Image (cartoon, rainbow over the protein chains, first blue to last red):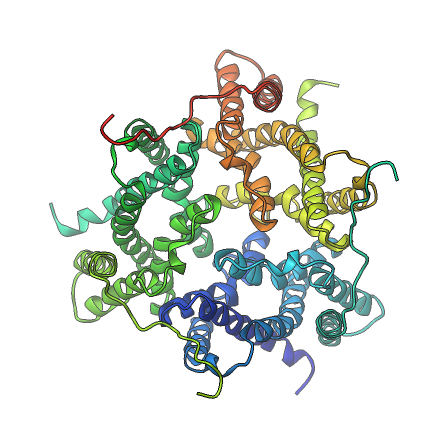
Length: 210
Length: 210
Length: 210
């Protein structure tokens, strides 16, 4: 199998893993199984839906691929019956979200490259596809949005990965490798932020006149 | 009048009743009359707008039907001058929202059937059209989203109604009757949840190793 | 330079000033510089993006104008390094938001006029373009949405400005002057609300049976 053949799998992987995080948020809200499906679907398809809308790709990607919705529903049902086995569901959300981010950013960059938009817009598409599903999950589920966690390399990881993809392409890498590099950079930065406390300097309000 | 002729009325009814709930949320926030109009409009057209966007039906439904916007504004003004007569505005929101849900879900299913998407997507369109107006109202108005209420058959009612419509169609019912059946199932489930405490089992985190 | 030539500048001004308010919200959340860029971009382009989507103008306005995204990023970086000099960042957000509102409402009205939609939809486009960027900023950033501030002439200012533009056009003014009048009315009403306590009467729940 060539590297390029991996690319369509990014969408499936991203939808599935984000769906798992959405279902875990539903478990924190103690919802019923349809509530789990709701949050899994919102999180799984939210970012890609927004990406398709702003690029003018309507109907959006899952309208012609209903199996993606069965995937989110299936993930929700599995989580409904198994989440109580997890020691920390919040920790599981954070780490699964990191993996989802690492596949959703290249999925967004890949679609932007196909559409032929400018590099700046390509980076934004990567960041938006990666972060908006989780953002909707957190806003609707009354969780603190991960984008608000101080200096934890969340948006920064998505941004870094999208820029890395463009650099790899500029250096002559094929599209498949560029997207794999993108995923690797996102995962490395985000895992470094979560596991090892990697940080960028954050804004600190200083007292006036100092 | 044939049953099919009732179908276009679903949009008007759904926009109107959701607008009333939006205006009631504005009254809880003690806004001015333009604030009432803002929330009534956001809630009234929010779900259908999202449905049209993801299906690629742009411009969205109310762009060519400005009378819908006059309807939400009128509803807002009526609520502004009369809401103080209600004994419990929150209770009124819950019950009006149940009626709005019961007309918005078939409105979403009906549009999806016209567009000819797959059954899974049709169900999602029903749920999305039904729930997203209220969701935007609650998120913007700092209320706890109804989708987060534990096991109260909210998303579940929408889901059940959309599935019921597809079953009725599969059994040979006409489209008009299928949508009426959809509305009845949504209202029955939601009213049962609100009035009689009907519940689906909710997720309960058990202590580890038990 | 003719007045009409000012119109395309409205988009740039609105994106820039909203971006500044987004970056200031990021500073209140003590994010890193990429978090500043995220909030600046979300706020700067949010309202216009929604306007373009509902009007069916996809891809949305910034897809073909990546310099707008460089503008929001640049604004974010400037705020990251200078916001600590402000005495009250919240006060700065309120006033910058007032200026952004005063340019974004005519930007929305202008696009609606070009698209040739009905007057009611034109007013809604002005209000939506003006308020939704700030609304997304506040919802994602865990701030109380400005639309919820009691009677502070926020949505009301946007609404008044959009209506003023239509009145000026009906009175025979050119489009450029109508949009300038729109901006002036928005700014006047909002500044009056912020600085002089101008208010519309707000809804007050009276005790039952009085």
